[in-house]
View 1 (cartoon, rainbow, N blue to C red):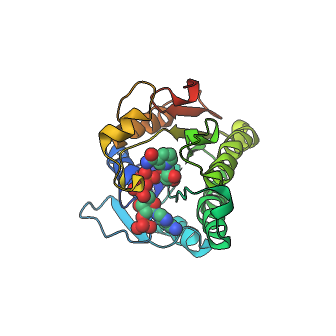
View 2 (spheres, rainbow, N blue to C red):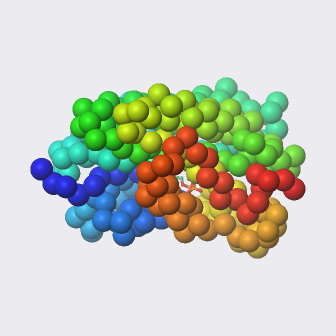
Length: 236
Ligand SMILES: NC(=O)c1ccc[n+]([C@@H]2O[C@H](COP(=O)([O-])OP(=O)(O)OC[C@H]3O[C@@H](n4cnc5c(N)ncnc54)[C@H](OP(=O)(O)O)[C@@H]3O)[C@@H](O)[C@H]2O)c1
């Protein structure tokens, strides 16, 4: 069996997820990369699995592909997510369902299957959840309660899973981005995004990838939320 480490990354077609694919490849990992629209890669160590992460069948396909193509799973980054910003009373039933199904359901279906496999392998593993600083530091200009509900759920689950599996060598961490320059920002300029951070720096995909790599390489770190947010979580 191959000794190459293997990571599953969701939401990997663009933005933070695409940066994470490159970062894990630089670490030597084989990657199983998912999004709804993801295209096959020229890199033989990156296997794309297209599918909606809200569908348990996608989680099944990601795990079985990792095992068939690379023989094992070491890490998972739950990065796929949607962000619906609107006043609380404007949210529709569909907004609610989509946020729950993608941001929470996607995490649940896949993480459960990956942890089951990690326990079978018996040599530990690492899960990273991508949450948001808005969970702890709400912004009156960006009302987004469904992000708070769903990403806040992931943040709480990070600690809960970290403790449940600590003695079995499975670490569970989160990165908490501020405002990162990706397509999810809907065309806001890097300069506009920088103004949302206390230190007035634009957050980049590379900033988040560096944080995930740190967590990946830090055996003593579990149950941690790594804020990568230009100081937002500290105050404003
Ligand atoms: N950028 C920020 O400032 C920021 C801040 C805090 C948290 N985050 C979080 O960081 C994560 C990545 O965000 P990003 O900024 O890189 O956003 P992005 O550029 O919009 O990328 C989102 C990725 O998720 C995929 N995706 C969306 N819905 C999916 C679904 N149902 N099933 C599978 N894949 C799906 C998208 O691809 P397809 O369309 O092909 O499915 C895409 O690859 C998200 O969870 C987001 O909430 C971002």
